[in-house]
Amino acid sequence: MIIHIRYLRQLLQGRRHSWWRSLATLATLSFTMVLIASCTGMIPQSIRNNPPSTMSPSSAVRPIDHAMGTTQVPKIPERVVVIDSAALDAVLALGVKPIGSTIYGDPIDGAWPAYLGQQTQDIEIVGEVNQPNLESILKLQPDLILGTKVSAERLYRPLSRIAPTVLTEGSGRSGDWKENFLLFAAALDKTDRANQLIEDYQQRVSELRAQFTQAKNMSVTDMQISVLTTGQGRIGFYTLNSFPGSVLQDIGFARPPAQTRPQRWAAMVSREELDSLDGDVIFLIHSAQASRSMTIEEFTRDPILSQMSAVQTGQIYQVNGESWVAGRSIQAAHQILDDITQSLLEPRAN
Image (cartoon, rainbow, N blue to C red; front, side, top):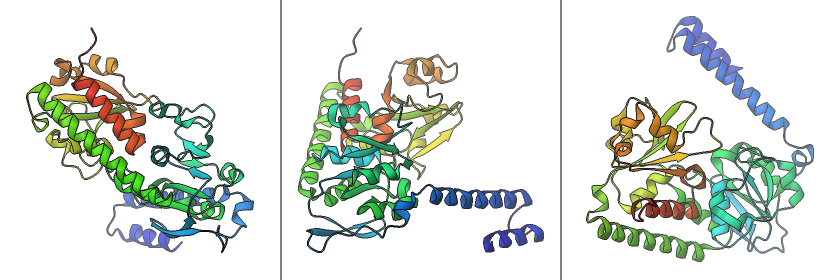
């Protein structure tokens, strides 16, 4: 109540905030308190009563520093659960099949990311990315849980009562996917393998850059790539500081000036702001699970958006949000390279 009283006093005295902004702040604080209480209530009693998970003194363990502190993890984890799509992508790339994973969308009707193919076969779904099912995780008896602070910070304590839990500071959406990949690898004792995979990725980036120069007779720096997204009647772009932006930056492509300025990973704009949306090439991210996410056909039929030069020249390509947005790790990065190669270097079928 101290926070509420302080803001109420500011409201009555008319200081620092207008009356409507203070009311909005009070409403937000109240909602946050209710949300925290409801999250706590969703934690099964069996987990709340258990002490934090500890390894047997005879177990071979290693300390791992991560976003929530230092955690002792098994030397060789055997029953891994992942609670974020980036962690799923990463551990599969490292040759570890988790016994459980969250997914985007309804766990009943949801589907695994198509770009991961058969790698996800026989993995048990343990809830939605933003709402892991703690009881389902507990039943699997994992010896390691991997995720991100962004989506799982509020559940870190109950998760740690189930098994040692390691969370990355960022989610990868701001271009920090390589650091996160290396942390997941360290928790799995797969650092050497991770370094080799990153080296392989960098080698492929160099080869793609050379292929582009040879095929187009121009440098990648001479082509502006715009990365757009739509949903709920709005339109926006992914910036230089996003996951797809980091892959494009690795290759060396230029970006429209407006897409290099924001510090955040994405920005929403007016559909009339064509200068911030246009480029020599547009990659349009379509997400089937997002409300009113436009397909390329819908986008190019729009009377305003169709005026962009990339649309006029046919240099617009639809790509999947599963890899360009949600993947946020090394296999998704390779999928982006696949999409760029197919779109810009391979002849289109008539």
